[in-house]
Amino acid sequence: MKKLIVFLFLAAVSLLGFGAGGLYAEDQSNYQNFELDTLLHQIDKAGAPVITEDYIIFTSEPKYRFVGIAFDFENYQVIHPFQILNHTDDDEKVTRQHMFYAYKRQHKFTTLKYRLILDGLWTTDPLNPLKEYDDSVNLYFSKVEDPGSIKIFTQVEKSDRVHFIYKGETGQTIHLAGTFTNWDPWIYELNETSPGVYELELPLTSGKYFYNYYIGLTPVLDNTNPEKIYTLDGRSASVIVVD
Image (cartoon, rainbow, N blue to C red; front, top):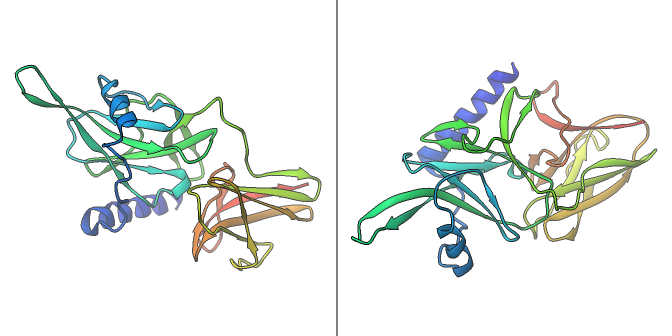
């Protein structure tokens, strides 16, 4: 059943993205930026993601007609298209050097998970050896790790208090709902404590709780908490246990 749900979701994203363009993100890469332009031309060929203080550069072989990337912090619902980096030789012959997507870092992170779309097929990044298997959806995800980042994640900090963390784009309104609110998405709102980092501490008695964050009425899984399940009514939810 889990495999069927994931297959239907990925198929729907592919069809909607290619057919209507509705799930494709507007390109946020600023190719005219001198710093980024210099960084891109230092990458001779496609390979594993390149991490700098300001950017994460994802690359792909130039043989594909279309390459897109989707991230965990966007619940894999937005497809960011790659661009083409061309090379001009001394005879002014232009060839495709590689394809790339430049992610502008908006917050510190420990692990960033993603999947690629290569000519319509969802897959892990074939050039990135770092992968993680999620048995809740029976899929592998590519990941990028930043060892110098601040490790912040949703956790039980005291015997009866949970520190909820959401990491995403800055300037959003993020609400929290779950079994402890009867899934009412308007009771609790997280505070943006630093750019792209939203926090809320909540007292909860002992037990297992299912929850999601909400952007408007759209549920979003907790991208700092690996514990996830499918509820009886078919929704995905994050899980926290208070002893």
